[in-house]
Length: 414
Image (cartoon, rainbow, N blue to C red; front, side, top):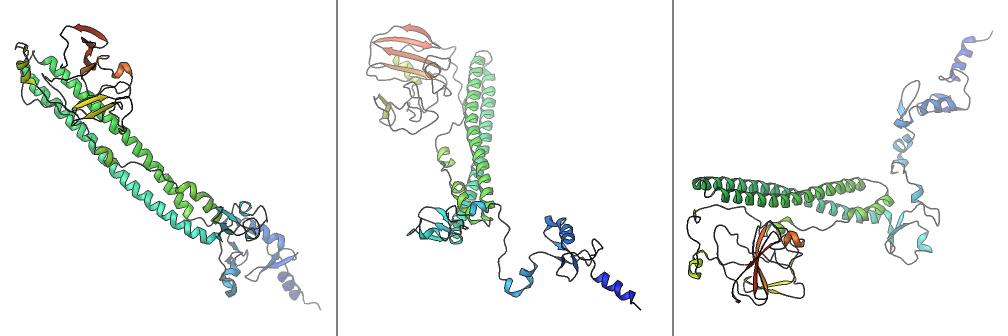
């Protein structure tokens, strides 16, 4: 009599629980259950993205690398993620993985390269070179982070500078309005002129600070982007990719400190009228002694001087030179016309004398006059300046390109 129950048990033992048929090309997985090779591969194919497999019957979880985690001799192995650029890591000459670095030629090589092409060169393992470059990367990141902090501090300083400009301008306008309101009709026109000048200076200074702000914001964004790339690069396991990418990311452009720029004389918009000089009802002075009541001692501003003008005697004397002088670059410097402005701002009635040799031009101009272009910056050629030209022992007054001849005897003093 045949033992049917025993046959059923044997069939169940040798059957695949996936296809429910007898095992074909049987395989046994770590938990002890057996399956057809194609069945278990098909089942695991749905779990490949997770890299963790399970038994269809008992649901025990394991990976293909389980022996490296369970077997004592294999536990010493270092497991890394598969490289997406394996072909790029192969030596084109010897078809071997490039695990060394030639410091002489600054390139990755395989272990056979030092025998022929790189014979006698300074070579180390890629891991050793990576360690050295990793230190450089950390130093670069530290410098970048410090520069970000410095730039952010400078940005706050510029924001405060803008506030100060607005406060100074608003206060100036308020003071001018209070003062000129007492002069009614006689000083209304002067009040409008002063307010226009204040607003013009305000716009000039705000534009300058805004330009610096934009440059700093761009630099901060670029530094943060580079820092992010360096951070990602610092975590890569691919030595070759690290060594190829690091030089281009670690190069930093030098920049001037904002404090060096702000240490220069910035315009503080201030036209506070502390003493009302009501001159409209008084007669014009006619003698030199009368003019001296309004005399001013002026000094010249080297930051505005054209490069062919030499200042001396405490910036009170200017000489035209045939060659450029070693002035530093400055946004206030005249670039087209050989001109220079005074450091002092002038309000009300002012008098000063100029001793000259040869031909000169003496002028009064708004501080925001253009620094480039003949018409835009030339004294007397625009609505920002008034000029007295002294040429060939004759005199002409210019305003906005309009010439008015002025009579007078030749003199070395104007």
